[in-house]
Length: 389
Ligand SMILES: *[C@@H]1O[C@H](CO)[C@@H](O)[C@H](O)[C@H]1NC(C)=O
Ligand SMILES: *[C@@H]1O[C@H](CO)[C@@H](O)[C@H](O)[C@H]1NC(C)=O
Ligand SMILES: *[C@@H]1O[C@H](CO)[C@@H](O)[C@H](O)[C@H]1NC(C)=O
Ligand SMILES: *[C@@H]1O[C@H](CO)[C@@H](O)[C@H](O)[C@H]1NC(C)=O
Ligand SMILES: *[C@@H]1O[C@H](CO)[C@@H](O)[C@H](O)[C@H]1NC(C)=O
Image (cartoon, rainbow, N blue to C red; front, side, top):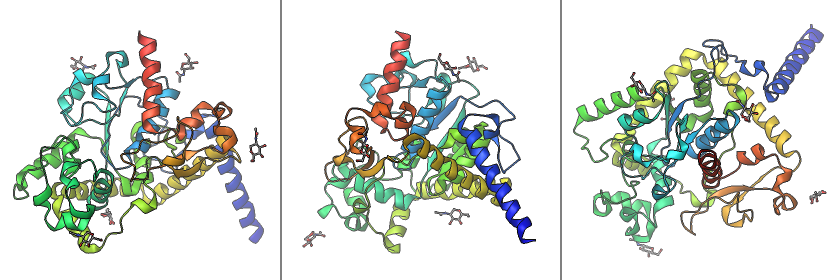
């Protein structure tokens, strides 16, 4: 009996190993999913994607994943014109005029924008999948406050840069028309909604939720990122390799505030529209996961994490990228953008003798796994505009 069990375990382990090896080789089995319904891989991969990149939600990690997908599949990513910076002239409402003509016709659009469905529809293929990501509003607001407190008008004048002080009298500091839209209902704003619509207008928020629901095929949830990726993979018929990632653009632990339950409630109350949106779409995410089957979702998440580890191993071997403060990263291609000297954004560095100008020892697509968004953006933009000019 015992030996039977041992044998079964061995068979299972070697199946998984084989599967992962094949996955890395890009074989068809990489479409394998423990969740057989609907099974990815039976349909061709969906390659036209609109990803609305919201602020401080893990969206940089998603953007990196989409950039790599685009590179591997020879797809074109729409980028902003120079005048718009790396954002599509955010916080203005998206307009097709903000798109660099050398990056058209596009398969993927993922840089920050304020969503405007009609304009995006004019630009992107009709069969595009629309995806976005939301984060729990209190933790998101804390992140916004810490990240933007020295640049955002609404936060600058708060005594001691104290989150408590802001939340005690938010109306005293809040400036609704400043250029950085971080101080209230930022998710609603990014999605194209009216961030200052009063809470008493219940019809507005109900209609707005319905509008987001009809525009987007998948609303990912940052707190359940891997589970969201399982849904994404099924929706787009992508293989396991397509959804592997390394977390990017995080703050160092020292730059995060610890939150009391009272403060959390205040942040949710101040961001009442975002809270309604979040609660609605978190519930629908869990309904979709339940429909797929919790056991197979868990299995698929664990398969994804194992594949991620194998990928890192095959990319970097015993010279794993090291997570460290952005300030300390010498390699310019790997140093993340810092909003101010007082906020510590983490990035990845390679061990000294690799990063000294000889990063070519690491396969280019491996390096892209840890490349910050601004640098990666520029690499793709240069390549696309050269190709078209
Ligand atoms: C992408 O383009 C390269 C070079 O033109 C080609 O070798 C490769 O097969 C293409 N890949 C896909 C997935 O189309
Ligand atoms: C989308 O469909 C409409 C009408 O069905 C067509 O006029 C338009 O050119 C299509 N857009 C794209 C980008 O294919
Ligand atoms: C600001 O910080 C100083 C020193 O920690 C403290 O004495 C003061 O009361 C704080 N002010 C407010 C408004 O919190
Ligand atoms: C999201 O929804 C699930 C299922 O209803 C719930 O258990 C979880 O607490 C929610 N998460 C957050 C952060 O609200
Ligand atoms: C890089 O450094 C490691 C440890 O410091 C060393 O073992 C390795 O030989 C070095 N590699 C090269 C190419 O210099």
